[in-house]
Every structure is written in C-alpha cells, then in structure tokens.
Length: 191
Image 1 (tube, rainbow, N blue to C red):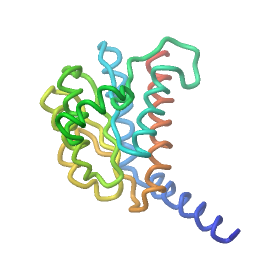
Image 2 (image 1 turned 120 degrees about the vertical axis):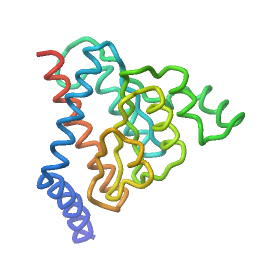
Image 3 (image 1 turned 60 degrees about the vertical axis):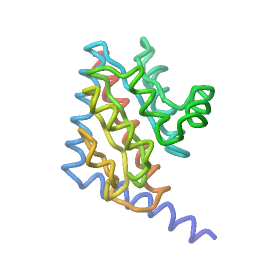
C-alpha cells in the first residue's frame, strides 16, 4: 500500500515537472494572467465552466477571484456557471445538457469577458458549445484540458493542456495552474 501511495505522489510530481520544463506552457500561463488582468481592468468578468470534478475546480477558482486569494481586497467579478441549480436543471430538462453553459453565456457574456473552460478530455460537448458561444460574443476562451486538448483546442484563445492523460493528475495540475493565475492576477491588479 505504501508503495502505491508513493507511486501516485510521484506520478503527480512527474506531471508538474513536465509543466515546469515546458517553456511554451509557462508562456501561455503568463499570457492568461495578463489577459485576465486586462479584462478586469476593463470592467469585464471571468466565467468558469466544467463537469464533475472540473465543475468543482471551476467553482473553486471563481471563488478565489470573487472572494480573495492572499490579499484582503475588493471582490473581482468571477462566477462558475453551474452554481444556479434551478437554471441548470430547467435548461437541461427543457433543452438538453449540451447547451446549459452556452445558453448562459449567450445571456450574460459580453465582448471582453473571459471564459475558462475546464475539460480533462477536451471533448465535453457542453464545454465545447460554451467555448463556441463565447467566441461568438468575442470573449477570450482559456481551455484547461489534458495532453491532446481534444476538440476544445479548436475553440480556445489560449490552451493549457496538461501533459498527461490521467484525469486525477490533470485535475491536480489544473488547480496548481489556476492558483498560479489567481495569485499573479491578484498581484498585478492590486499592485
């Protein structure tokens, strides 16, 4: 059992080391920080969407912006699109789950806003539809995916594709990268 635990921890470390050595990914993360900071400075908001564990990650990261990260500061406009269960269940029931996020973006998204779309496979239809709707609104789309980016990669302004195919390792890295973005945006915006 202890060896299995060590093996899991090592796999997580290996994924993070691959990110650390990937200069192109680090440059993409830097671009995302700057573009989110610019969006906030221009009075825009950041929206998050995901399914399952990625929905939990979306809600977590939205709360880091709208609540606080390190600093006691004003709230930044950030929201996870799945937190209104009445909306989510009504739209899923009446129209289908594939459009629950895209319909919300059509209603509240505006030019200059940012969508962070989390999908470990990059192939979740409702997440792809959200990215397409965001593009139509001239929003920036940041995709958080696994190694190949799936179909989502074709609908992103910036793609953060964690170099792994194992869902837990991808999600652990999404939170790491999300926290890095939150910290750096907070430092920039409130400096």
